[in-house]
Amino acid sequence: MTRRDRGGGSTLSLIAVVLAAGLLVGPGPVAVEAFSTGGVDRQGSLTTVGDGSGGATLDPYHGMQSGEQCKLVDVTNSLGTDLSVTVSLRSDSTGYGNLTIGNGDEGDEVTFSVGVGATQRVDIQLATNLDDGTKVFFHVNATSAPVEFAGTDRYSTVNSSRSGTECSA
View 1 (cartoon, helix red, strand yellow):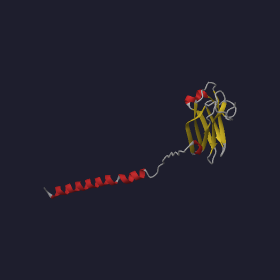
View 2 (tube, helix red, strand yellow):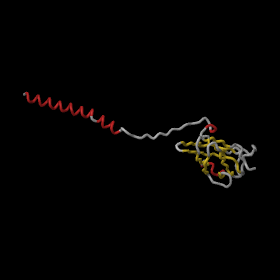
View 3 (cartoon, one colour):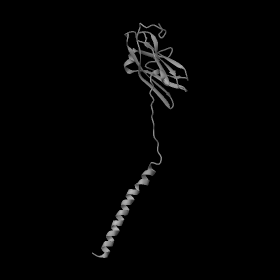
View 4 (cartoon, rainbow, N blue to C red):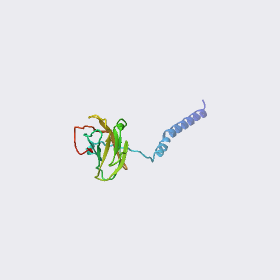
C-alpha cells in the first residue's frame, strides 16, 4: 500500500463526514424558515349549566294546547350586543305546526334580530290532533360575530290541562 492510497481514503472519509454533517445540519434552518409564519384557526366552545344562563336565554313553554297558537320559546339576548337568531323545528316535529312571530305562519323556521336585553317570543300554530305529552322539538342558533350559540334538541310540550296566557285560547 502506498502513501498515496492512504491519503485518498482519508479524503473520501473527510468528504463523507462533511456531506453527512451538511445533511444533518442543513435541513434545520430550512425547516425553521418554512414555518416562520402561519395561521391557526381556533374554534372554541363554551357550555352553560342551562338555557337560562347562556348568551341567549331560552324559555320553552310546557303547557301548549292542541289546535291553538302557543308560545314555543322566548329567546332573550343576555349578551352585550345584538343577536341574529334562527329558530327551526326539528325534522321530526315539522308536522306539528308552523312557527310564527306575531301574526301569520312562517313555516318550519323563523329568523329575527334581538337587541341587547330584549326578548323575542316565537309561537307555533299547533295542529289540532296532538296528544298531551307530545314534545315539539326545535333548535335555536344565535350569532353576533364572532360569537355563535346553538341550542339543539330543545322542546316544548303539549299539555292541555295546564291553562295560562301562553296560548290564544
